[in-house]
Length: 328
Image (cartoon, rainbow, N blue to C red):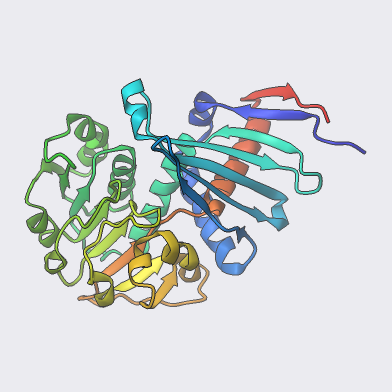
């Protein structure tokens, strides 16, 4: 019998109304666990530079036990800023794994933002010192904002936030975006330009830039520091200084992917543990006071798929979304 003659469309407004940060955090936690247990698969990543100046990629995978199959097509087009749009663009498509027919198409921009922020938050909960009070963020774009917001929500002990902008100028839009979370815990926000001093004076460092090169010197990173690294997601990109990874305890969302396109591409021989293996208990991690820890975040397809699956279920329960005919 033929099935799936309808296609569910979830645009930006639908996604915004259906998702909460808390729900995304749990969906992403599930993604890491599924990955660790082998119950969710991550297929090889496609990542190509385009002659138009953009970068185009496809991340795909499946969760057999949940009948989830799909991909996210995404990339970065810097020229979108001149059009008043976001440089990062993403679209998610879910399929019927038995017929190959499309089930649901989702605007993936908000999904990407939230799931990456949630992954960073889980990394902070797992690796950052529990007595951390000082946060330093590199970048002021969408990812820098969401990473900071998750950090401030999940680590209420944070009291001071320093941020470094790419152009070394204060960014009022960034400050306004994170002000509610900072105010909720009595935290201060300060723009700084002395990069090494900012890193040396911080317990947690988040790097969320385009990944054009090292953002600070190796000697700036002090014992006990944790770093969440977001920007290196393509071959040739980096945010960390050369040689640092040889002196840290290294963790990643996916080992193969991190060594291909993440910070770990610059230190492929350094031992690395996947976050999912810690969440499932397959591996153990006890932070020592002076440990420097790095979470290499390249973003895996299962994060997109667990959130997309959640969205589809929420849509069916609420009636939110647009259903169109999609005949065989």
